[in-house]
Image (cartoon, rainbow, N blue to C red):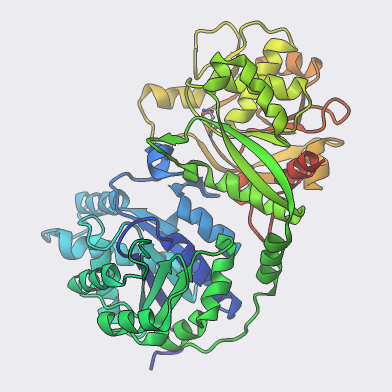
Length: 545
Ligand code: GLN
C-alpha cells in the first residue's frame, strides 16, 4: 500500500496518432481530481529541441500560450489552466531543448564531478528532477504529466524512460494513462482496436504498462471492444474508458465519470476521495447546452491556411475565451475565419463584415495582411460594428485612427517600416537592442504586467476595478510622442501602465460606437469556464445587441 503522504504522478501518453486529445484528457483528469478534493498540478513535456514555443510558427505548432511569468509554452498549458482554473509557472513546462540546456550548463560548471555525462541516465534524471521540483513548488498532491508526441516516435523516448524510472522506483505512486484512437471506418462498419493494441505493445517496449486506456472514438465503446482492449493490452476492463465525441470539450470530465474514471484512478493510487463536488463545472456545461442565440463573430487573421486544412489551433485561447463569454450570455458562437489578405485587394469584400455581430482582430506579426486588417478596423469603426482588437489588433486600430481621424498621414508601425515618418507604433529601446543582437527567443515583453484603468470607460465598467494584471507578448508599443495627438482626436487610452508610459487599452467612447476596444495585452490567456474574461463578456454583450 502506498504511503499516505506520498506525492502521486499520473503520466498521460498518446497512441496511434496525434490530435486524439491527450491535452484534454490531462486537463479533464486534473479537473476530476480537484473535484475529489486533491490539490493538483499539470505539466507538459514537449519533445522538440526549441527551448520554448515562442520561436515556432503557430500554423505548424498551434498557439503560443503565455504564462503569468512570461514563459512561452504549448497551447495545452492553456487547457490545463482553463480546466483546472489555476495559473501555472514556467517550471511546469519543459522541452528536450530545455532539458539538454540545463544538463550541458551543469556539466560546464563541473556539476557532474568528473563523471561521463550520458544521455541515459542523465537526461531522464534531469527530467525527473524537473517533474519533482514542479510538483513540490505547486504543492501538488497529484501531478499530471502529459508527454508530447505519440508512442513509437524516437523523439519522446527519453521522457518515457524518465517516467519508467519513476515508476520502478515508486510503483505505488505512478500511474500511466494511454490515450489511444479507436477508428470506426465507415466501410468496415465496426470499431477497430488493433491500432490501440499496437500502441500498447509499443509502450511495453519502452518498459511501460498502461494502467488505464482512454479510448478516443466517434461513439462510446461497446462491451465487446472494451473486453478486447482489456485482454490484449493487459488492463482490467473497468480501466478501459470510453472517450466518444461530445458536445464540447468541457463535457469530457463529466463523460469520463460515466466510466468511473476518478474512482479508478484514486483506487490505483491508493488514495481515498475527500469529496465529490464538481457542481460549478456542471453548471457551466449546462450553460453550454442551453445557449441558443446564434452569435456570428468574424476573426480576421492570416494564420489559417495550412494546405487543405484550416488550423484554428493558432488562436485557441481566443476561440475558447469567445466561447466562455458567449455561453454566459446565452449565445452559441458561430466563428468564421476571415482572411485579412483579401481585404487588401478587394475592398468591396469589406461589406461582408456587416453580416457579423462582432469582429475580432487577434494578435499577429509581420506585414502580410496588415493593410487588410487596417481596412477592417476602419470599416468597423465607421459602420459601428463591434470591434475587439488583441495586441496587433490594438496596434492596427491605433494606426487606422491615426491615419484617418487624427490626420497623421502615413502612420505606421516600425515593425513594417522603421523608416516611416510617423511610427505611431514603435519599438522600445531595450527591444531594439535585443533585435540588433538577434536575441529573438523569449525576449519580447512577456507575461503579466499591471495596468491602471481610467474611470468612466468601457474597460472600467467591464473590469469593475481600477487595477488589473494581464499577460503580454509583443515588442512594439504605442509611441508616446503621438499619444496626445491621438487622444485629442478622440481615441481614449483607457488602460495604462502604472507609470503612465505604456498604452494598454484603447477605446472609442460609448456615445461614439457600440463597442470599439482593443488591448495591447492578451486577455484571452486568462479566460476560463469558471472565470470568463470581463472584456470578452463586454464584447459579446455588445455584439449580442
Ligand atoms: N507584432 C506585434 C508586436 O510584436 C504584436 C504582437 C502580437 O500581436 N502578439 O508588438
